[in-house]
Length: 66
Image (cartoon, rainbow, N blue to C red):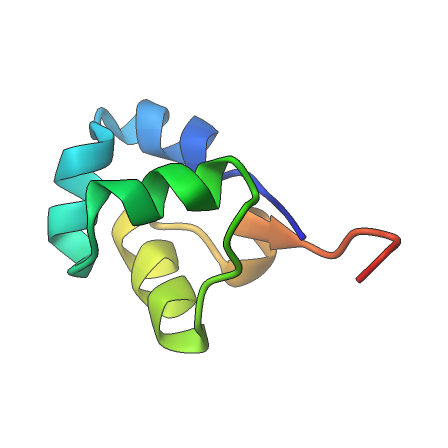
């Protein structure tokens, strides 16, 4: 799954640590998400979308392999 979390995080002025604190995960989780090494739960995806003021579709898209 591809994502646009890093771009949207930077546009909002959040560090990985700040975004992690906002959604209740570790900075390492945000790092793994941005590197596409971790697929978030539905709850975490919804929290990220709300905080970054984007729709789920704007943050995530399926790969051909998904």
